[in-house]
Image (cartoon, rainbow, N blue to C red):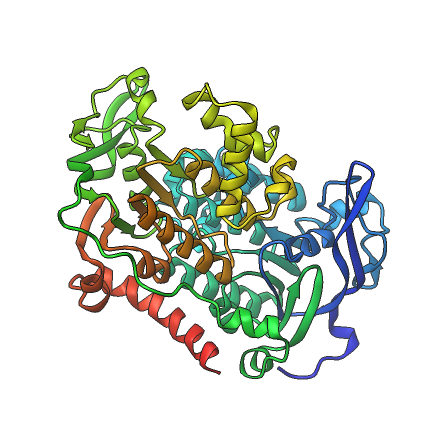
Length: 547
């Protein structure tokens, strides 16, 4: 990267501290960091969950929950103005137009009561005074630009009608709508499959080149950092422990923590499946079709075939992985097996057909059939403490258990997923995205289930924590004989955890077989394209590790 003069500095963060008040106590989440972002360049903030990355980025836009959060010390200069000391009215002129942000968890960032067209269009109307006709045209352009299929049909959709990856792309469209000077990208590709990841990253780079946009990239994926960033700041426990160019950080890391991050990735192999183990879940020709209605009488004119004739068999102690692009039907398949969406076709659990059971008949089976959702913040009640969230299932399924017994069980569940049991009286907003995902896993495991649907359980986690969670899931599986349905776009994690893989596209299984065969000898072009995208990311990551 060429040398830059001070005139090119867009953001200058000086000795920033961020404190959070809990009762009468203040704790520092960020302990005095300094960094700059120059016009047109990409600066990465990397580190494990809870290191202070997102808190630092949110401080730039003053989006922290004030007055619970405060800045005891520090300055954030944007074109010479200290953002921490300007009036809120002035800040509103900057937010969205001059500085935009892509949040990590799109479901909690999008308004569930407004359509996609309204939400993307609101940005254009607020900051550019766009007319309704011009707004619709520009919204369509943005949705097509970020890779949403059938964009015109999605204009009237609500966030819950989109997949996790599609919601993230809508967030990216909203952030880019006004061509900002600075884009803060907080895990911008977390929810995206590997092929769309590559498209989105290329899109961001192209827009950067066209408009001279600077980017603050927050991610745990070092492959993305290596491809996208000019300079890197490594954070640990609220401090920047190392800073440098991408070349310096990856080839000659100086700090032990930086070397730890670069060397971290899911390793090992899944536990060997036992072909004689009892079948826990089995489906045959399963279908989930959603009607498309038109006209005054709302007649059904067609169907969205989210799952279209899929069969699987899952044994105790085995993991079946389901991979494919966003919207391919992966999550819908898992929800159908759990009887959380209507479906057609037999679903057999532990030798018993459950597809015809009423809700009250399913209730006793809920203890044995658990789920870890993709979006942890959206699935955790903000009004309940962590202890209350995790013990909720115990209150329903084990009503005779005493308070102390539940407390002990919750403590053990938190310890199992690598969290301090003493934190159980805190609330979800006090945890990072990765920590919230571990809480979601603890909530599922506290009931000691036999079957668990894992919907992108590691997507929000940094690499080292991903490896820990994979090891944890394998250990739990071996000890308890758990059957996992593992839904993911991260093929590195799939390879480390899954015995059998189903590749889905447009509701159908285009290829399936033992994991080794899928990874080493894929037959279908679509499978080869998925593996090629993941392999290219892995080559970059492996090269960094080898350095």
